Image (tube, rainbow, N blue to C red; front, side, top):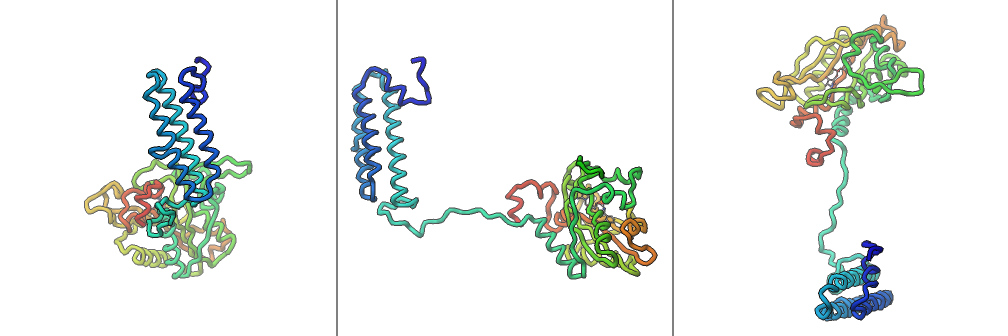
Length: 359
Ligand code: FA5
């Protein structure tokens, strides 16, 4: 018995020397039945063969009854064979039924019941941030802004140097950067902000210009309820003759009123590519007395902004004696969190359908 393969029980038991009669009968039954099944051409023939072999008074039931007459030590091996024959017949009959009747449920009279409920098909939908970005784009389009795109793997030149942050500049440490190895000579990074598209857009379209740049950015961040390592930003750039800081304040105050209608506050902020620089906070709508998103302050930092630094205009080939401009960059996830009461930014990338299906 040492050579017997356990994965082939039918082969194994045909080599046991006792009770050959019932075993041979079972093997013959299987062979005959499988031949008969091949000849099934209509539902009646199927029913007839089912009753003949697998019915309560069918051949298999008759042979199985003979089990009680065999030695107890042989019963397990005969039992395995009975099971093997039963499964082979069931499977062959099921295949024959599906071929003849199609895959319709067996209604007893081979008529498909069209009132049966169908199978639910799950369909995908837009990610909440995608549809929110579209809403943001529409709002800015109404104000005369164009929408521009830029690369996510960016050169250090566009991500930092051209934005008035050369390699020695301490402001580079403000954004923990993923560096990318490429075969190019230029040093490349996953862009840490959408601001490099300011330079690219001015190089391409010159001045005057009025654009927003929605896009994904990457930072080697410690993640928490309001910090992701991959998140969205919406950059804005307006350059024309006579642009002043009041244009910036008016545009962004209007935007927040339109999209959220919440209290905001402006405070000074530092970014090497604007002078003066500002930041906007929005009142925390998630709590009344402090939470982990606003860190107990009642305010959520939402946006950096300011008047475009003359060095930036120069990097992009725009004459700063003729033109001035404002720029801003905000986090749409944070805005969405406040608008819809989402208390953790990590939910957006969690893939959790219970969260996503709410939008
Ligand atoms: C910047 O990235 C500047 N480029 C913004 C700017 C543009 C300033 C133009 C001046 C002119 P900051 O790192 O603060 O700034 O990010 C801007 C906004 O992105 C933040 O106010 C916040 O809303 C969002 N943000 C920043 N880091 C994260 C993060 N880890 N997870 C989610 N949102 C973030």
